[in-house]
Figure 1 (cartoon, rainbow, N blue to C red):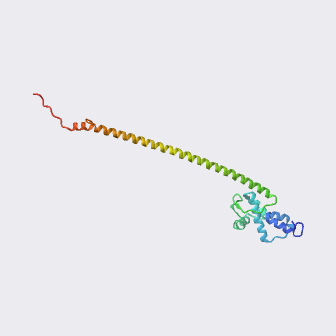
Figure 2 (cartoon, rainbow, N blue to C red):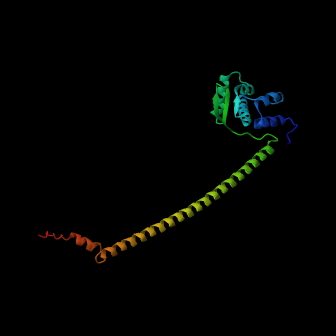
Figure 3 (cartoon, rainbow, N blue to C red):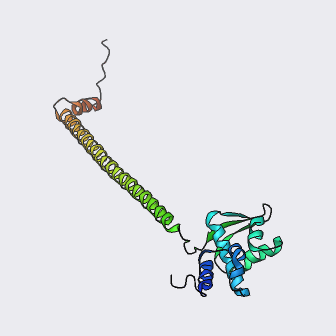
Length: 208
């Protein structure tokens, strides 16, 4: 870049620092950088928390106090709550018993030099995983459709069988009914027999 090696290169270093650096990075090279104002220091410390959260979702208090130049737990927790969580750059849980900050969400930062290749590889892996997942879902949909067709076919066979049984029973009942009609309508059949039974019997007188 045109400003490299010039008197203005220090401002490029500051720009890089706020793009992907940390408070520790600033302290290490602060001798040849402009002095930061309090607002800039606060911003860089906030960005430091984001950088730490990129690689670890459980941040020990001791590590945070060292990276942020904080001397006690109360000051650290106030900073995390008031300057980070209330600002919306991170969400998480303060675990005083385990002395750590459990990160649930953290805003992203600019990529560091050399991170682009890793980011491309990560996206490629994600794309391959998504393709495999999509293929698996499509196969499950096809299987579900085939099972649905088999179920419909089986249901149709059962319904047809039920209809056949109904027709068979109806035909048998009709035949039995007609058979009974013929029996009742024949001379000397059941009706005549019933009539004979209903007539009074003649009493026989004993022979003297």
